[in-house]
Image (cartoon, rainbow, N blue to C red; front, side, top):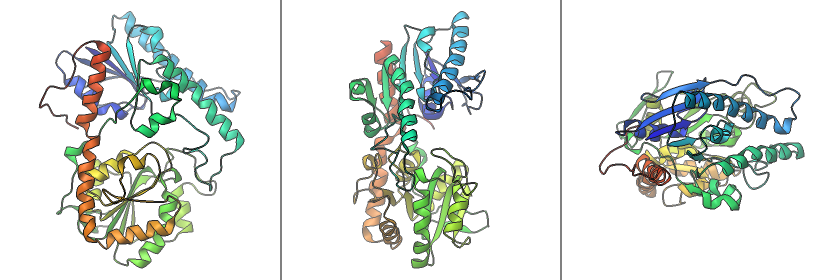
Length: 414
């Protein structure tokens, strides 16, 4: 069986599935990604770059659509070249969010196409307009609505769509729900877990140890979408109330979602200016190695995860798998992973006093915290790599008309 993966940032969400198919006897995995895609060992990656960007004269509402068309056009050229050389995949698995898969059916009309449907935009009830600090303008709402044109085309073309959470599936128009399966791609639970002897060495030489009052916060980039502003505003009160606690913040200064502040180069600079803290107690590590990230979760006494109603971060699930005491925002789809009082605590995204109170309560380590930690680890099993890949493989087998399921007893490496 020949599987073709298409993802701008390959491997992205397909890392474990691609590795599984690359190792399968008789299977062949090939990938297409942008020129900046990181790639992965064991899977050949063909990189592309659009021949131009959107025209400056293009209407702002449809600029992202034009960009998607340009991506799709370049990938189509690559697919036609592969076809001319005799290549024909049995299954195509793609992330359609940037337009790469718009025209794959023009090259391979009979090949089954699976789309990873991550998000469908709404002007109400999801991320847009959620935070009154950043109100949605009528023009912003119009631009958001226009972005869904490409996603509707993608839904029409694919043979199967996959969303990682029930809430994300529910964002898509109901007429497509029968086409969308809920399958989380999975996290490497086997490589995560508590370690009572864990230590984390900070850039200033200080060593933090498991069992100490350490607060952790993790995001790809430090920005409002992941509640960084709410966390920073709560920190001064937390630090005053618990003079011994240390805070570890992991994340870059770029922008993954939303935009940069107008009065500062990044959100970290702006919020530090507005909320002065002791740099000997609050440690910004930037982007770190996976080993340091894992150790940060292992030394954590309380892990804070805040988010707009948006895509669920791997970091929350990895914190659960690490048996962290998690205090998270009571937002979708966090509610699918955290059951309040069973495997963590939820607080209102905008209630700084509630966040402060729960963090201080966790640092006090009441008896129920140990039970919550153990339950967090158990609940993470629902998001295991093995479960996610097994479900993907079952559907690939159905679409391809052959058995490609995981052999009994086989494990999936990270």
